[in-house]
Length: 192
Ligand SMILES: CC(C)(COP(=O)(O)OP(=O)(O)OC[C@H]1O[C@@H](n2cnc3c(N)ncnc32)[C@H](O)[C@@H]1OP(=O)(O)O)[C@@H](O)C(=O)NCCC(=O)NCCS
Image 1 (cartoon, protein in one colour):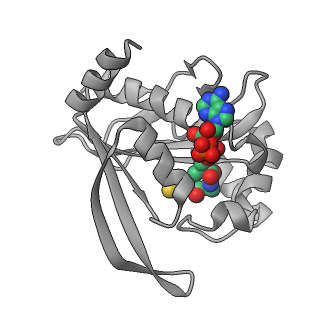
Image 2: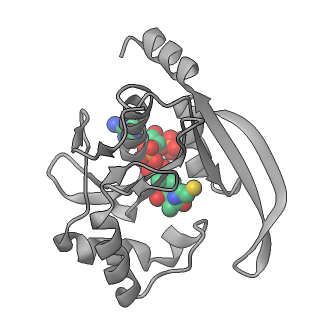
């Protein structure tokens, strides 16, 4: 892996990924304080103060070097408007493994932006970064998130029953994953 690796904006056909900025505060707050958006996330709807802190932290997270480093870029639409965030978390350098995640503002949902943004990160993961395995963890009730994994060709690897006590209930966890050779074969197949 070419580490340390510094995040640079990534451009797709419709979306761009770039680092969060101070002027994303209002849009990020609107998204992260929405109970519907947070329904299947590990955290509860956030206060403005929490979002200010999260934004300051995540805007600075631009380098992958050690296990647990992450980047959390904004997804921006064709007009440059904030559409959501992606999460890319380096889990292991030795095993060349990362975790991926996605959140869209309600107004940006239903347009394919998260799937496109995830494709950009998988291209990066298996291309420039030379990773071996990328996985996503989700609440299996989160059908929209499951659908993204399926569209990406990620395999359903595991279903942990009542894995976590979360938001006053036992919650299952699903694991979806894709390997470098699977992504490359898929890319070749689709001639992308
Ligand atoms: C999970 C989440 C990102 C999924 O959002 P989404 O909009 O369904 O996902 P995409 O951006 O990939 O869009 C796919 C949808 O856009 C539709 N679409 C419309 N125009 C499209 C286009 N031009 N290209 C591709 N897809 C398009 C697709 O058909 C699909 O809808 P469908 O599932 O009804 O068929 C969103 O529900 C969310 O942010 N939820 C709250 C946070 C969350 O739970 N995050 C995941 C934690 S694991």
